[in-house]
Length: 89
Ligand SMILES: [Zn+2]
Image 1 (cartoon, helix red, strand yellow):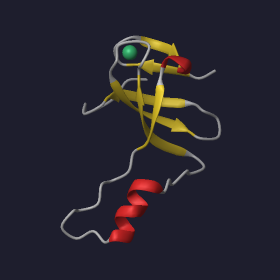
Image 2: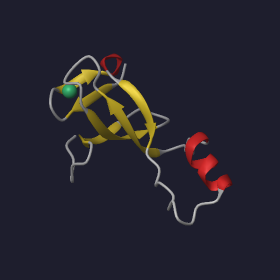
Image 3: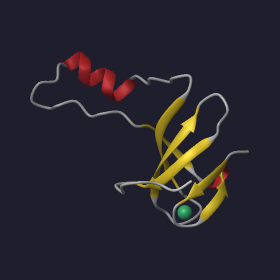
Image 4: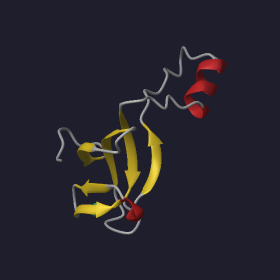
């Protein structure tokens, strides 16, 4: 079980959330190649260590949040509402 501290609802079981994927920087539409765009859409970095992800609290407040999660331990060190500066943990 992973406890995800939702910025709106507090700590909740990860089963209440939908994983939306890892956050990646969107390529510049004016300069991107087809290969870069394909990589952006379909390839995942899947790092061993800390990664930044988007989750959706589908069984709670129905809002998106950004979480920093360690892929080996599933520890979550911070969360924040999507589009919000700073974070809570
Ligand atoms: Zn929530």
